[in-house]
Length: 455
Image (cartoon, rainbow, N blue to C red; front, side):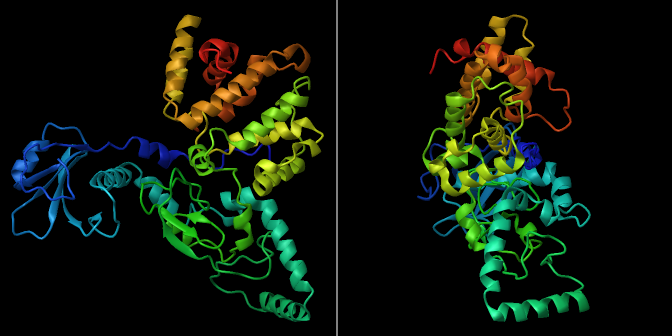
């Protein structure tokens, strides 16, 4: 488990980041402006005049208008992909063009620009998600990967309780007979032979269209849920998250009890901290405190692996008990260190984000240390607050670990070699992490100067 690679696919997330941003073109004097529109409303404006208004504007620029007074709809005129587009726009208490409803025009335009951009730039990925040939196996999905031990435990509990009933024994014999004598041509419910995680009963998921706050990924195909409204579906019983299309392929194996144990691993950092009203994830804070209490003199700390079963057990304890998890029962400090690394590795967006990564590489190539430090500070300032705070906490911790390198044998270079693949978002094509390792080493070595002496 400790050696698990990042299970989330970042491509759709990175493509969404490249989508143009909305820019409303303002009309100051419009006496007949409806109360539900702002200065983006230009009144009665013809097709050609609207096109001219946006001709020299950037992609994402838009106006709201009426083609003529007789229309029972408004028109959104939008510049995208260097072309002018016109869409019918309605309002019934919320803004909409088709099915999706929005509180503001800005939200509608923002979501629309992302949709257009994804259709233009990510069509090959969207087709692959829906392709039979490239479909992710349920047993290899993030849902099963992250919850394997919990699913096994809940399945065993369910089987034990059912086996106490004579009716279950009779039913189980019939099920086994049916499996041997008749195989369905198409069945979304895997049998025990297909997957030992699943028990011999099925429950359909109760998927409902959901608007997710923050960033979320599909737990079947591992791709990003793009957009800002109704990005996908969520099972009301167990919490399974998926694209609408992917949900059609999810097996009938809903385990409602799992909803109480979903936990914190594999969840976007900003989304998690907003939900918990916190500035740091408790997994990071508790692990760091434990390691600094009894692991600073442990030779090879963070380099030496802990036992996989114990790391998985601690992960499950964090998911079940949260901040009340007792780390003192794990006598091997490498288990705590391995769990911390696993938590950071499973973040859908690493602490050093995809946007900041190129700037980080550029910074470390500056010729003087002073120039490197100055540019690294600029890079850090571009991180989202949740990522900035957590990275600072980790770098300051690694600086303290490195201070004991004569005992623990973990110099800044050794620590950066271990953590660079985990903390820095690198494209899959990059296999040589020399620049990323140097950059993280510079952060650790120059921690007091970079973080202005913050504790």
